[in-house]
Length: 172
Image (cartoon, rainbow, N blue to C red; front, side):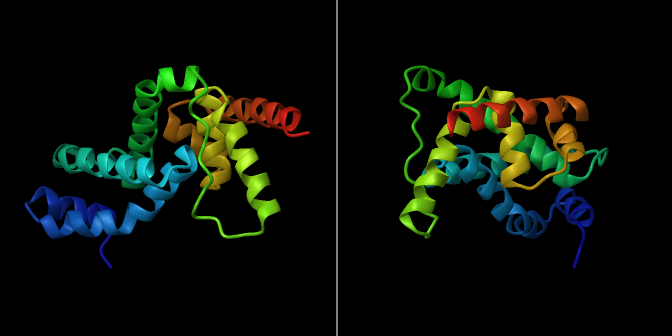
């Protein structure tokens, strides 16, 4: 199996198949990130597609200064920022209530708790929401979160701590 680096080099040399392999390899993680971020299947699909469209253009000039996975997570964060800006008024008017997640097939009580948690997470400030999404949804270490978000590790820990404190208060 070829590494991401090898596939990117092949793509830069003109191989469309190399890019398709990269997409297949990383699509589920990207989609999963956005499904946890938006709780909306259609929005998650659109955002994941938009990320890979941007990747298609950006990888032509990729300089291998970081791992592709880090670069992709950074693109996910940037796309989530764009999504938040685009939906600012909807969020301010509290029209951003997350729909019932269709991808969960558990008991009604578990669904209610999970929905309540993600609804509460959706009300967190942007930075805290991203840290919590990466920490809980992607099970990333603080060091990875800091790298992806372009912040220091301590800032990621503090943001997570404040978010958890808020969530505990809201969900009592």
